[in-house]
Length: 237
Image (cartoon, one colour):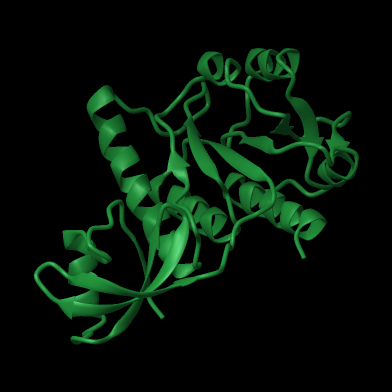
């Protein structure tokens, strides 16, 4: 059953956005009385379509389901090209990421002006929305504005992970097994050219744990998916 997210409930009815209404009526070819799931305030409702243009859906009942990780994991991904970022956002949303921080660093291939940054974030949000619907999430992960290292180190998380190929790094498996009592976590993934020494030092000096994902050197778009997969394995049923 298709799932959609809305921000308002009026008289036991939901009105879908223009994009979602198009998806329901044109892509999915639904009809009056067709059933869809609506997520509102992180809660899921079974509804039936009662009209189109836009789609209006009436509540049948609330569904008791919550498909979220027990830990709130933020993926901080250094900027990469569109195809790779699409893959990262989509797959990490499917794996339960709570939020995303696009990170601009010295070796980032992508360099954006302020206007382009707004367009990118809007595009990223659409990818995350689509993946949230597909994977039956109760939330849509937040996509933060693009940050630099100086802005990133000011944020507060219970557990802060920096994925590196440094030989003295601890394994992520070891860090997770010895860090059970936390609610929020951030994983920082570097660009294809890696972090500069000063960037890496700044992160470590501000509480980020230098962490390895294994002996093999992974592509940047693989690292985020592997790290979230390990978290799912370690903590989820």
